Length: 122
Image (cartoon, helix red, strand yellow):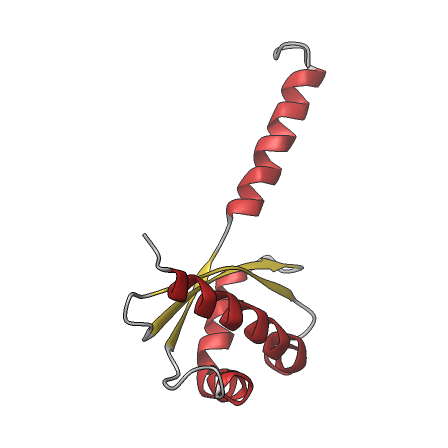
């Protein structure tokens, strides 16, 4: 279970890294839309696991790879934004969050079943 401090730091990092992606993203991965769905902090606050939703591209893993190639630039930009709130800058790890994709697939499946009258009435 996450502590209150872990949740607070995770939210600060989520908000500030979103701003970093807005500023730096177009130079790294172009017109792809990347949103941070969740940040999980380790108990010692030295690791931030960032879960990203990626839109407007078929190869989502490639975008994660591009972000990892520009890791030092992204981390430095984030550090400039949060250095007054944190003593130590955590290590950043990027993970693909495909939850939204799964929701869309399930929604399409339910619509198809409903249209074919194989699923009950709503």
